[in-house]
Image (cartoon, rainbow, N blue to C red):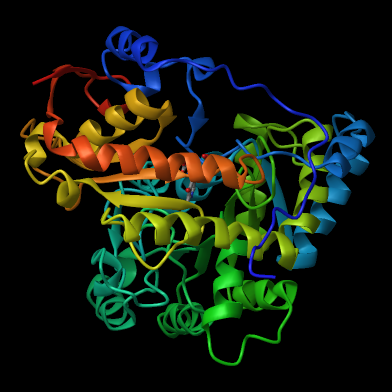
Length: 454
Ligand code: F0G
């Protein structure tokens, strides 16, 4: 059969409240054209993020009932720890309420003024935590990773030559090397096993600990299995274990590839570092056998980790994304290719070329997708990155719109509907106008700023 079906049936449903285009026009105006200000009840298809928005399985809900809420030593923690160690055999597994809490703990210990921390591309919260400690983060992804049209199979790879030069140049000021799999900020693009090993080898050569941000490790493993020579016959758990074998630790948002609605962890091999991290954890998150989570969350994650490495799931997951990208490509919508793991990235600057970056073509597209089709997406461009610390405004490197696909949540007819919305939009796209920002906070303006159409 050609059709790759959703490998699940639906046992519980959440109704979607239908809205009309006229209603959505009013809602947009009330939200001052910031999609973060919309009520989610007013959204038909919510593609703002794939984080925490996935559907849990019947087995996960059953596991929730097994949750033990003891403050210390809960069996839920030991089930969670065993599930993590089964895939990522680190000595210490420290639960946190989400990924950024793990980052905050790690960089409060390893960061600090004058330090320099390289990665393929730091995710925003990772960079935020590095910078909050006084350190600098640097992105050393390969050149193809920044070219939306390049069809390199592993566009998330670290540029190993640049990393080598970086480690030589920055010497003692580098406390660790990071690598994000998949590379979210670069379009959900994967990193090859060869490149993970190459990054680990360079870190070792310079005596630096190597940490993986593993949020989308299972999607990354699927790409390794299907795109990397010699990996096709290997199981996903085997590939995952190899990915983490040479690392000294990891940060994780369990809201992605652990099928959680909340959760995360910091895993480490170094005993002293783990002691320090646990002390910090007790101060900010909770006792080390629950972190910021309830016992039932830990049990849901333990079960989720056994489901996320299922090949039928991963085949369907990656195919959904590729299907949407192929169809949009055929419509002439410029999309980041090849398909990444968790999201479709549309090159709004190229598609709405009549709107200059300073009038936010990504925002114009995101607003139009909502008005026309009730789809909520996220601008990743000049609104998000344009405001400089000195107050000036500089166009971002790209003006993209991200349509992040929640896990096991929407069906193929939702995907077909999305494609239809783009088809209708293609006919009127040249009539869309840009935006100006009328009010913005000092930092992270995209979450709360107000817009007015030009
Ligand atoms: N690292 C990566 C690569 C991420 O994509 C995220 C979250 C985090 C760390 C932080 O994890 O949200 O649990 O604190 N990404 C979400 C997104 C928010 O929409 O891409 P968190």
